[in-house]
Image (cartoon, rainbow, N blue to C red; front, side):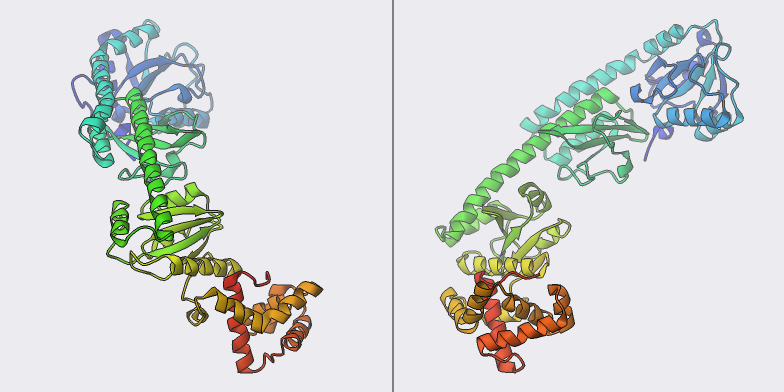
Length: 499
């Protein structure tokens, strides 16, 4: 991470440095420690007698004190100096003959190691004189900063007139401001496409109201509806002239406006995509029209797509997870139907509680009725098995089941009808016990543990199931018939609930 130590001794004639202050005869300053930091740029001179003034500093200040804030113990003095240096203070000026305690070796050693200038000023030179000299010397730089602020406001015109994309816009703002710009969500993910998130997430504040100063730059919230949508991290570029906090605040405003535009564009696309997917589900959109619509949403209509049913994921989280994957989304009750290219489910892997069923790939223009049935079946199977994803066809049984739901219902009634009625009448769990046993490859101990019953109890239920259905599960023919019927029941949604 770059900081003020990376800046050259003088980046331009208008930049005031600590070395310049030492050269001003009227100030009569003397260097006590930290000579390697004399090239640090100075933006202002400020008096503080607080032990920790850093929340009220913007960086590059010369901090002046009569010594009330300087601790007496060596380690405490060292921590005081490190706080100032980490906040970007250019130098510390002490009036050593007033209240300043004896400076300990730990303090002076830290100043040398960090290249943090510590200066002494005589009683004859009041602090106001130093402040006036600094203000006069940086007046030209202040004019340059005002010009930079006005040019940042011009970014709004760039977006409108030149139609700059997001990477080009922020590249221009970096050149103008003298900072490297990063944008991220509060969790550290990229906030805007084409602008990187910072590698070091430790600079992100725990509280949006935290002071903006960090070593080598600033961190400011990017505001959206309801509070901070993310953060802008601005770090000084080596060899550049950073424009200061006011310009960075304007950069955060530009980022917030661009984020609002992106969100509006995504919402328009989402609504258009939902309308398209609804028409495709109703089979009212001709293949050529479907291909044009999908191309508008970034999907290659010449390649196969899949339909998925997603459950347990809020709309906003789903939208963020799929932001890099062209897709259409439609809400149907608690389900979210997603049309996308195969492989998009990798983006949902980190979303807790997500249940997703995915159809087989199909060509754009084919009716979605079968794909929807496959996706709903796979989602139900995923929920039953406690798995986040199931792709239709992974279960070999599904390939042999008829697509006609009337035939599925007839199979369930013929094989399982009696046991379904028996379970309802007696409050028993014969069917769920058999299904759990089958799903665990007839391992009685595992199935009993999943059902929270004794293995002997499970053995009784298996025998009772055979008596009610008239099918002996020890035979291959009966086992196969019952297994197909159990899978058909699950697809129809009439299977008893299990563990």
